[in-house]
Image 1 (tube, rainbow, N blue to C red):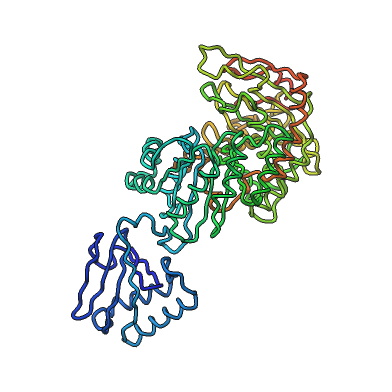
Image 2: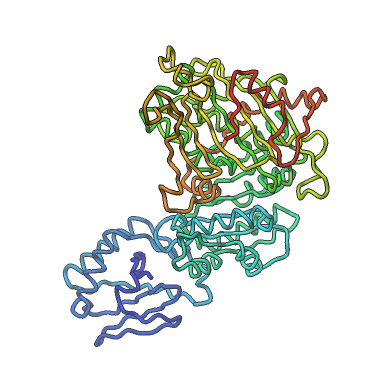
Length: 600
């Protein structure tokens, strides 16, 4: 609740002053002096009559004076100059200190039926509106809205946030709320007042039927946002959860008709970011003609995993690792991302394949974060500057260093059997970075669908100890004695360090053991979904996990030679059993580059 004095607004807690809450005007009388009040939507408006208020409510005035020192803000319903507001506040303060009555003559009575359209900015901070374009799609219902609710519950979204759904379906606000309500859940560690929080979130959710004319639709979205914002300073985020063929039209109409002029605007774009170098360049140029680079957030949910965020923390926050992070001590780095039988590729997968879907964004971004030089700060642009240097240094892929595969499926297998004959579902490759730090170190990538298990991990294998005096105690397989740092996301998130130690007992026999940090044992909490992490980054303006336009172009240059060879039918796909370990050729590729294949 807040207390309004003409152009000054003071936030009051409900327990501070016992005032009856209702939706009608009433009078609080003290002798011949009285206060006219209107309450509704937790707002109290006072009209102070002539007389010495100080005698009757001196304690109240002193409390108000203390609050004014910290929470003065201009009134939203009447435009006044800043200097004028400050003068009246100063006059009001002096009157309180001398015991005379302030002269306040403006009373703003807001009808109850207009409460929903008044300013969202009741707390004095800028309001935030988030619009999900394509609100009735599977991604929006299954991931985006649940992530927004999780952020709202945890307090990472302002209480006055506005959530807007936009699509072509003929629906109402209540229809959208009903549609997404079943997808909203509270995590195990977030159960207190879950129902109340969910109701509050749904009540702040609105729907706009954009129809088939996006120009008109975006104008309606803008009008609805302005109505909810009530003239306050507003920031806006637009999540474009739309098919690639509709992206340019939606983005263009949005830029012209739905951006706010009183705050910042940011747009989130889902992958894939084009089909090839040419289409990606055209898409980028079109977006940059409407938006600034800093407004564009190209999202890949796999980059929101805790494993990815840990890469830079482990390197730059621990002295033990950074001195070893180079070709001098590291023999190879393996990046493994496999999806098991039950995981389905995305709706666009059949036309794009695993290279455009997973390798172009997730895999190459992971390599860039692993291999980049220390940034001068944690600012997003500083980190992106280092990432793009790595991407430009990665050697273009050659067919001899790549294995492509496709799972064999039939109608009885509960998977997508519509994948066409040229769409790879498996990719393995050896990549090299031509710079001083990583010259000659293979970065081995293995990713695929329909494999034996779901696995996401990075393995950094170190070189053998030169002139190791314990060679005879290690045994014949010296590769197993190599030190290794393992960063695992699935299954069971963990950080593992493989070291050699002596087996207890008489004699001298060495064993290879793992020092492990299992997150589920160390931290008693549920890990937030990757969409929560990335959406919060967008709100905070942290763009280091989102691809910049120059990073996008550099990534296409790396994979284009393979895509061109595929278009010419110069590369074959090796079939592999659904639920198996993938193409056999990947084993030979690892051996060719002198790396031991690791299954577990």
